[in-house]
Length: 552
Image (cartoon, rainbow, N blue to C red; front, side, top):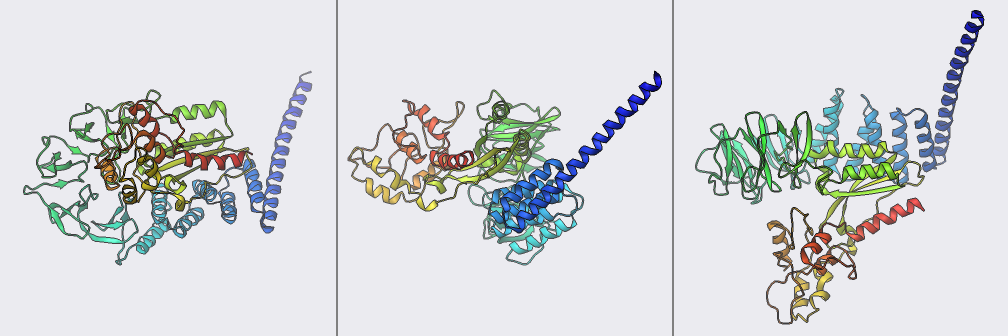
């Protein structure tokens, strides 16, 4: 009996082993069939079907970077630029020391005039891989292309407010956003050009401010070891090894009691005492205690972007607001966790998410990638792109990041809508009939002078905002258009009105792209909040029509 049991077990094990070998053989055969079919379609220039076959092959053997390269090349042949980029990034994530996909995407960026994106991509990969000699060589050659004065740069920053710093040896200089060298490397340190058009530099032991012509424009009588970028009229400075803040006249606004201090931006900054950090408001009052072990800063030293910052609390980094409150399910401004939950539960055929331009800033790289990865893991092909509302008929400077997720079982490819900036009207053309509602006799003259698009409409949140057109910088832009940005009017100007008109909620809604029959709240504050926080309908319509094309 025991012998029979042993024989039976051997038979079962042998059957299982043979089944495994047989399944492996079947999968390998299917893999080869998909590859052969894809190559056949490529010869016939049927690139879409070739992509589908390569993707079927990847289901059998997913870690094939060379297949992603083939997919990228086929997408390029189809003219599907966004899918080409996505496929290149997939291949890059699987590459070791070949860098074929990396250089293919870099060359594409250069062909498209996206030099900053090419530099940023190479810099990221040089930091990630130990086989980076050829990456650095490519980066150096690229740096040589963008400068107008012959020089070798060891480092190039990301662009911010129209400028990049460059480093050659131990010295720093500046490029503009077109890659032209405007100030050769000659300074021990540099900061960003601030609100009054000058940048802090250090040279020969002195700290002072220069303009873009390299003229020394401002220098305090008292010696400081470091002067930072001026934002919101506030300058971080170091004196005798301690940090504090100055105003534009270099008068102290705080005591010099900190071990480090960041520039103020979007309403707050950060200061350090010992090994701990705290947030400080633009009124220079402490927003938090010294409870954070680290505060992330970008290349220019800023810790805040769009009213949020990444800080280290305990063992992890968290996203907080200007008051140090963690953004999460209770915060109205961070809806990504809720969006991920809804996607996982509903599993829609398509997903569209939008966010502000700052979402693409390097300081949010890890957070952004975690969001995109979560959507991909839920079974979606994910694309991300910065869209300008003015390219879709909205008379407003409103760049917005649009994330699209198409469920992987959908066969059609998504393309972002084509831009038509030539169809966009000026503020004057958009509002002249509303300005005439009460017979204002100067409406036509006003419209002729309001001859550009508007700055970004703001709405605020329950914590911030109100019925006006934004902070001081935005109100200056409105003033240039002949609009009083302090407050919102109840009705259009009267017949004999003299002065600078305010906008009504209906006018603001039209600049945001809403039709005139769209109803908002009766009171101005909630109405302006609803309008200003909305995604412009013409842009939503353009993107939505492309999604509908996929689903029909």
